[in-house]
Image (cartoon, rainbow, N blue to C red; front, side):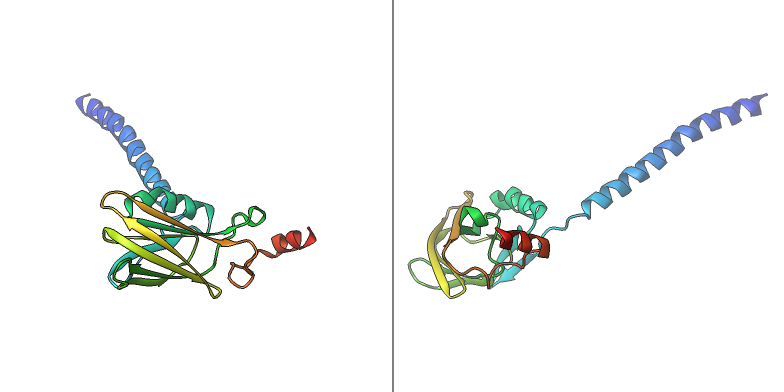
Amino acid sequence: MIEDIEAMNLMRLRQPMAALVLGGTAAFFGAMTSAHAFSNPPIQMAQGVEYMCGGTNKAEAAFMQMVSPRWAATIEFGINDSAQRGNFPLRAAVQVREKYTGRPVMEAQSQGPYMLARLDPGAYDVNVTLGGLTITQTLTVIAGVPARAVFMWPSNFDMASVLPPMPQALAQTSAAR
């Protein structure tokens, strides 16, 4: 009789424990699967300055916007034309120089509409070259305050050679207009 009671108590303990283990395992693998559906853009280094480029798809753009306040500088690239909204340069040459000395601080290629950089506090001239056209802006970085510069190329600039390729169906739709 005592053995039967002990066996029943053991069975009562095993069922909730098995449910807890199986539920925890499923939750763990579910979290791992969703976490790996999107991978963060890699942090890169140029002349000792950390930077990250991205934003080529909706999830990556949302990620870049979310983390940009944690970086000293955010540089955005786009086209000043509402008909081409959502287009961005494929690659642009970015050069950062100290404002008053002209000393080069960083040179890199952007790879998307956002570039985040961990620049030291100071005043900088940022030159972005795309298809032979260079746009320059001053960027002032203050400790603890994220700085931002937006580079917009004019709508009459020939962007065909510097934009990412359009999907074939979208290209045919745009050509029909």
